[in-house]
Image (cartoon, rainbow, N blue to C red; front, side):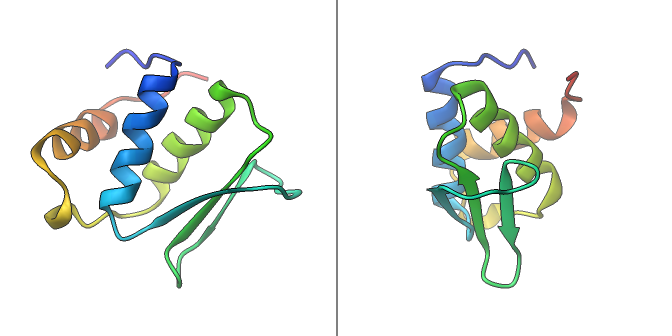
Length: 91
């Protein structure tokens, strides 16, 4: 899958999180990697001052790191998650 760094793709990733059991928040903070995942409370926090590219990269890294429950996802988001899990990021 070719990852497009656009607002539309960011919205797709945010929609994926909104249907999952994780809560996505944009906050200011001095995170070492640009994001923080609180696995016990299922909260993902991304630095709100990041650029569009940075936010998308953080969300993709979080998706690789956490295990999402796919039972709550619609068919489009299941397909997106499957496609993203098969794509290796080249950074």
